Length: 392
Image 1 (spheres, rainbow, N blue to C red):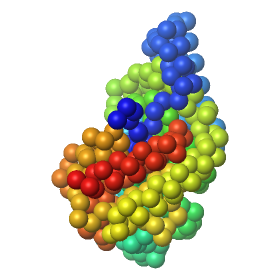
Image 2: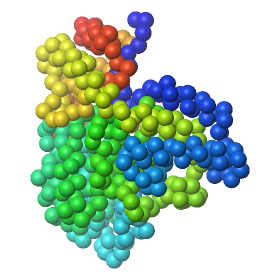
Image 3: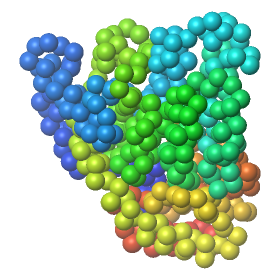
Image 4: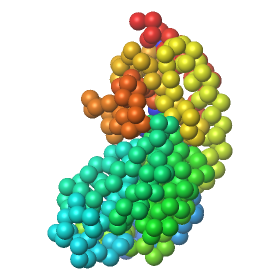
């Protein structure tokens, strides 16, 4: 082995050359505190505002509605907690207020979501219920990996739904959710909708422009880690989770890094044309998928019958443990994963695949996520490495 192959682009993407260059320049020239009013601070502030404006253009939003965060996890936390917070994007009172009838009471505000979501949504949902802030209605999941729209309709009819939280693209399977249908259903019942679009921005055309809030992470679109955004609709009030500063209009206190902002700006600018580049990866993904299925007769593709993002394949290998295959391939120089990076190191089977009804697959699956720089040689090297691992 002389060179490694990186097929874990859903975990994070390598910074684009223009992103690295922008950050290097900012590190030399605009390292000051963006909140300072002197010239150094104003120059740093310009980097931050350029990032905000580029995110707004990418999302089809107004820059005034973009709250810069540390990434998608913080953006998801902020969106969900704000929806069920006093002074947040919906006024609360009476039985709906904390300490009222309780989260399990029929009149309590409801959060509708599913077990397909990223942990920064599911764990927050569970916390809101424990804290008496919301009652969570978990929507059923179809075997192909999409939420059950019929069950969503029933959930919306059952009680006072405050918020529907859904992802645009699943991080593990690449399955694209029926966002347009979810938006229509939620709006018909007067519910807010939050879309976790972290895996969609810069990769797909569907970025849920009709949602009330959307989350974005810079490092998923070849930008820096530690920078992301929560994008709201015009006029929507977002309640802070943290307090102690006036940055981001008090919604997200804390000093914004102008160096990371410069990288986010460059990443968002190139992400506008990203979907065309990522669509071109589909041929390589299909070649890898077909090759893997030929190598292992019992293998099956998770989410194969659904619409999927063009760069992801998640394959079950019955008889193997997913983490062991990941480790074996790593020894061969191939970087893949057996779940989301945020769940790595846990002994639990994939909650996403469990929700899809395939407990066997949940323990024996590997995610291969390709990127703009993936080559045919990378695919051939991966198939050769898989062959060697299976032979052992």
